Length: 127
Image (cartoon, rainbow, N blue to C red; front, side, top):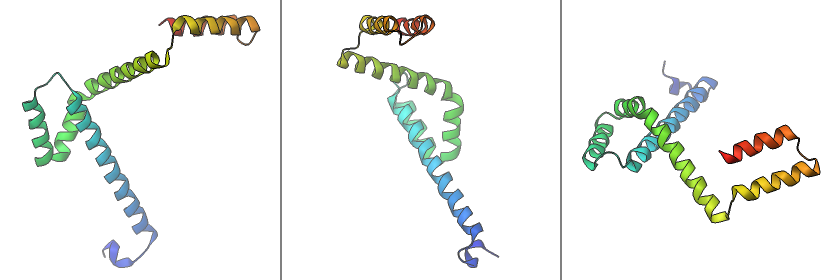
């Protein structure tokens, strides 16, 4: 007996919810992999075109292959992008490490933070 001939049942609801979940995960993976591929500057346009053709012909195999072979590079590129965005935001806002250390010193003098917290936070800022 097919699930859909039964009408609205709990089993059909779970199957539909699971199907929608996997569909959303699939599109999320596809968008993540495609955005990483097109942001890369270390490969040529021909290689990018071959990856895209592979995604069209064998979508599951090529997306999983990209994740397996380029997963570490994807993570490194994401970290680099986050650092660059953080640095751009800090320069736009006017963030200064010296100003932050001065604020920490005032908090320490006021007794709001302990010496250990001051040392830890200062070390984090200096990094």
